[in-house]
Image 1: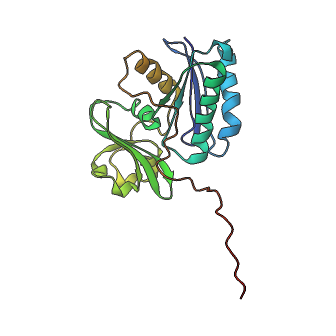
Image 2: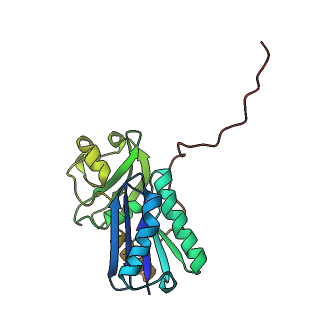
Image 3: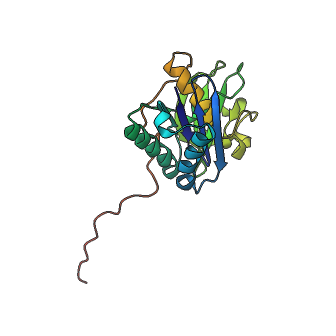
Amino acid sequence: MLVVGFDTATPAVSVALHDGERVVSEASAADGRRHGELLTPMIAQVLSDAGASRADLTAVAVGVGPGPYTGLRVGVVTARVLGAVLGIPVHGVCSLDVIAADVPRGREFLVATDARRKEVYWARYDDAGVRVEGPAVGSAASIPGAAGLAVAGSGGQLYRAAFGAVTGPAYPDARTLCALAVGARDGRAAVPLLAAEPLYLRRPDAREPGPPKKVTPS
């Protein structure tokens, strides 16, 4: 088994290679404007570092968001193309679940990432790390009970006054993504595997122009 996993749902681009037992190589970078430039070379890098080729891959795992349109689309489309070309399965995982998996257990918590427009993408997790609400999008102040809950993800750092203690990572880690995908496939991880479809939660800012307006003579 050789699974490549990557997430582009946040400003961070994270890629890892997992052999079914452990991560064998990884790469990451934080540049929210260069997802398209960074992802493919980073996939090539982790394969090369492990002495593997694309032909050795048996599955692809991809973070499906929620996240901003452009960056998220880069990761999902790349995963789907790899799966189609190589004839291997593509497993989607909610990017908020990836962050949540790296949060210490024992208390209920939130994961919130930057959704721009002064909003966050968020989900609520129980004390065992199981998602019980979300994903959703809205202002940090609108999340019920947020002020009393610990929060992971970059949204907690951006809107500290709206939450309890800041905990866990700011961005999804592809090492965790791979482990979750492998564990879910084997029945060892409590996260659902999703279709490789992006969780946008709202319409993209860029839209196709409508038909030209009629001009009436004055």
